[in-house]
Amino acid sequence: MEIKSNKYRLYFKHILIISIIFIMLIPFLWMLSTSLKDPKDILGGGIWFFPTSFTLEHYIRAINETLFLTWLKNSTIIATILTIGQIIVAFLAAYAFSNFNFRGREILFYFVLATMIIPEQAIMIPQFITINNFDWVNTFTGVIVPNLASGYAIFLMRQRFLEIPKELSEAASIDGCGPLRTLWHIYVPASIPFLSAIGVLLFVSHWNDYNWPLLVLMQEEKMTLPIAFSSFQHEGLVEWGPTMAIATLSMIPVLIIYLVLQKKFVEGFTNSGLKG
Image (cartoon, rainbow, N blue to C red; front, side):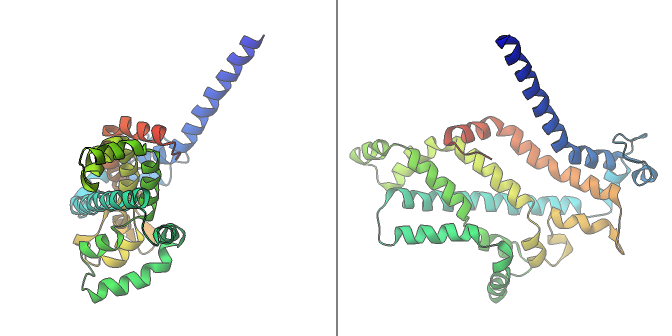
């Protein structure tokens, strides 16, 4: 009886997990279905997921009637530079916070934590005034430079560095390695899976960022993909087919990155004890 009870419990867990996955996939299925539906079926087709007839018209319009490829390039450049920049800054800052004793270290780290608490909208006006004084409005520099440091990334990287045995860095020091060589030869190899995980999270965050690029970038050819969703809005009406086509296409780069780094992504969360 106990074996049968465990078997039923396992079946229930599987059914529950599959149900949760399906519920989470509903918006994505709806988005993909809408992007492939005939225009007359989008608003008049009820709640049926699957289109009665498939069409690529919305994808053709999304690419030909907008600057989609330009926006794709802009999003890729901004998200890539911000991700790499934040990882480098987080690596150096976390190494200092976890391995060096200096006056004011704890206070500085509390300031880093404070940046995670303050809402993004609360600092947008001071940030905008600052980049305006540097003539960075309507430039990629204005989007990237104010966000090159991430308190979230620094905090997580510091927690990872604290898990690395101090004996490794002490042995490296005995062998004649300075701080930077110790960082490169000890901490970087030990953190590669974690770097992959946090890199994916940062890239997705910057890829989907809407508020700050909308505020900084004025010209249409400099805009990013999240801003592009408003391209098919006319006098309050939304053309859902092309809009969903843009949304579907914008997911492809993120999916590719996740599939390439999937193994490292899972390994990074598992080894670090970080849960998403």
